[in-house]
Length: 210
Ligand SMILES: Nc1nc(C(F)(F)F)ncc1COP(=O)(O)OP(=O)(O)O
Ligand SMILES: [Mg+2]
Image (cartoon, rainbow, N blue to C red; front, side, top):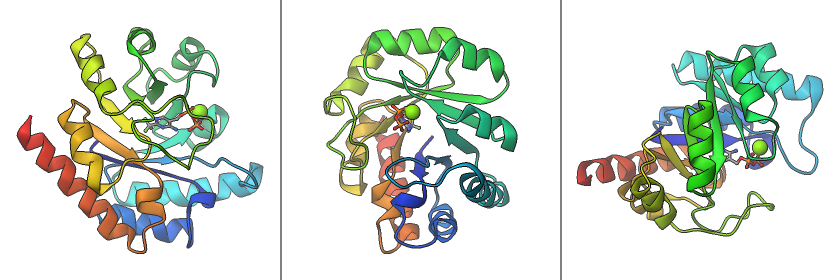
């Protein structure tokens, strides 16, 4: 969970395959394919890119997670799925993929407790900081939301998401997250490998402080 890279074709300034290769070289520990936004790929093109990115993750022994699209996840036999609060019945999804990684977006302790009770394997908590990547986010929460979840006894794996970059990743992990998830901080960086490495260094620094 340390450095969870999320991206789709619209998030990349160069070929997504190249961005992912570089990010993995820099130490990304988990990847989510999130093909979303105005003009994003769909059907055959989306599946073709997903297969390419899955192959690259497999070569680097990093799990490949699909965002939202359960059918695509099943057709690729991907390692898991990430869903938000509005992406369908989480209980039904858990029942359909009992042996896969299931990540759930949560914004407060109540949503977190429900997701854990249903069997979520990790929680995506945010937006921690302001982000321009996802337009329909809830209000920005700051890293204190992670502290609150831990104080309320949530022990499940947590990644922070939303506007996280090398400069602010330390605080998110020090607050109690197991890692950080990023899109732009890596995908828009002129050197995705260096961006990933810098994030990993910050996360591992924070691990030492805990
Ligand atoms: N995609 C995500 N990944 C994570 C992860 F934990 F993996 F970092 N956390 C949160 C989200 C946001 O998920 P959602 O609320 O469904 O919105 P969208 O489908 O637009 O991403
Ligand atoms: Mg979603």
